[in-house]
Length: 264
Image (tube, rainbow, N blue to C red; front, side):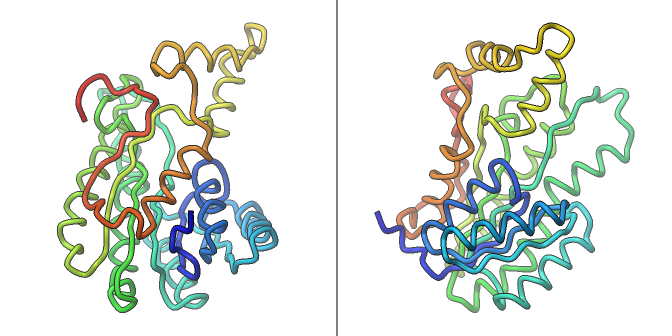
């Protein structure tokens, strides 16, 4: 199926590994030009180079920390230089947390707020004017099932992802008049490098069966009984970026293998 995305420009944060990289590759396969952003310069530049070589699109790697206002400004400036704006914004940068509310200091709350919520606010604010000039656009925010169904060990992650979910709804109402569609994704278990790293660390002293550890998590939490691959999630996200999803506005989509216990 031709998704009608050829020649569009997308900005993808957290774009050098995992879900972000899979989305970038999926968009590139549809002929989308890319600005990939991540903190690790060598990795994001190499990811952009490899995508450009494989798919024949222009891809730019930008090293920036979008949890900082200055990092967002740098990304916006580089996007303007390379493409004079963007048609698609994928707010994907993020990471899990581990704390109790009682013990977590203010600076930890602030960091995750800036990373998960303010990065999306600042990038949307910076790119929406250009999307208007281009005749419309798409903003897709990658939150988490934890925005709806919290995990006990990461309250800061749960709260900031819930804020991202609400931000998506509010922004969608504000910009749909300009033909800019905003939606949110709440993934469940997705087998990213972070999950593998954590599993290896947790099983190192008990035999190292990290795959068995992950299989057990999937069996206990997801009715489908397994993790998703980043590519599975990316295919759905790419579809939502396309004109084929033109009536999808202001929604949150659960891609969780049935993990959500209740109605969305």
